[in-house]
Image (cartoon, rainbow, N blue to C red; front, top):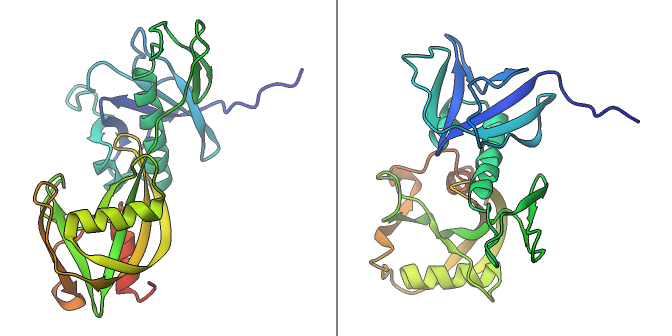
Length: 265
């Protein structure tokens, strides 16, 4: 029988709520690597295998209380979104996957059909032993669009934004509609504008807690801005020379804006 090829040392993705454990020294920050878990695995926490990174098997588990830096100088805990600023990009991306798996595990311990405890049958699948219902990680699709008007783009501030920056029109896909229909609907509902020449740009996992952002570009066609007050607080077209505070570089919103600034879209 062929031996399973498992790395002798693991990459550990350890979470307390939405905070991830980070190892640090004077030069850099990274997720912990080692043969054993970096902190004790609480009773009831499952260690999940979530893939490989840098030649190591990636493991993830949850802890019941945060690691305090004053009592464990080797580690600190940081909000997953903020970890983008300190972790290597591949570790940040894998941390997002780990967070989604742990969140799915926490919310799928019982069958939603009959209430029986579920059994994990693969890294991303659980099954009810009673009614055979299968449960997979839920991923919620959302669209986001950069709207161009001559030498300007539309930037808005949504009321749920974390901060004062201005970003792009976005919204969740509804049952029965295509991604493209969702873009047209969201733009009309949130701004009252008609758009044209819709083009696909790219997509990005958005693990806050379990989304995927699908990005588009479009051109202004007609209409005056009439903001949906419950969703947006401000919105206007901005030229390159008068841009407000922009989203951080971790988001596809910023990738769309940067592509426009570079003349690529």
